[in-house]
Image 1 (cartoon, helix red, strand yellow):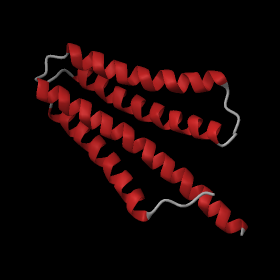
Image 2 (image 1 turned 180 degrees about the horizontal axis):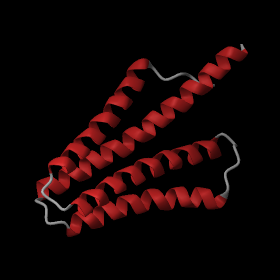
Image 3 (image 1 turned 90 degrees about the vertical axis):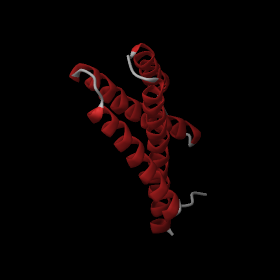
Image 4 (image 1 turned 120 degrees about the vertical axis):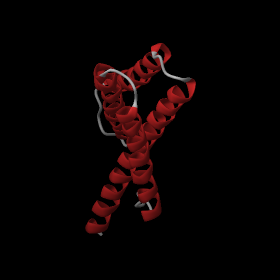
Length: 135
């Protein structure tokens, strides 16, 4: 039984995603670092969001009995872990204050969690809509 997510949960998920991404990007824009460093952190954010959504999709596919190749399942896990690890390594070696490091870590984490929630909501809403049209 697939129930559509509530409008409040959908809105909260999108707001969390936009808040996390916006905060992270504004932090990068205002950061006193070289352009190549900003590019590194931007790429890590985009890679992390993509990998988190991909991981959520393959895990959900497996739960629903949709075939997923072992290699893609493994790559989704590897990519998500790698994006987090790359952020941690970058922040560990960065010449930023601890509060700045914490800011990037928290906004990255919020963005990753929210991306998973948005993808879940999109999928649940689509399944509920498909179910309603069949009835």
